[in-house]
Image (cartoon, rainbow, N blue to C red; front, side, top):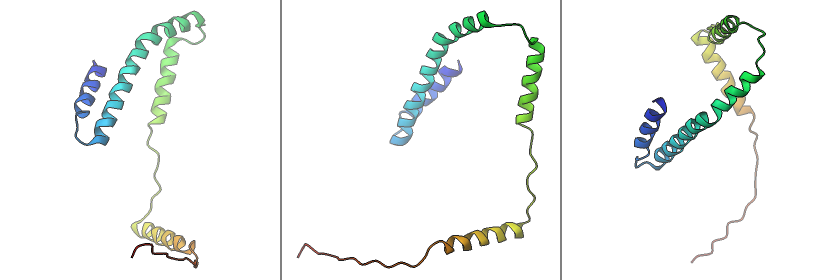
Length: 117
């Protein structure tokens, strides 16, 4: 149902008069449809293959617990560096000053030829 909803939404967006949005919507709808087809064709055979290779080494509860802990660790907020507005402004000014130092003076010689009366 999710795939049908997404493809329907992108099909509506594909009717946009703005070519960039329309083309992106068409490409996205096609990609989602192909992903659904691949799920239907490949997932059953993959599950059967994995079931034949499965060796009971870890209990399913331990695996689920480990997955929950890893997911929780991935989304744990990290401490941000505390920076006052003055320190941030100084850092921006120093960076802007350093960018100006990278460009040196240069000269070039050129010739302009006018070919029309």
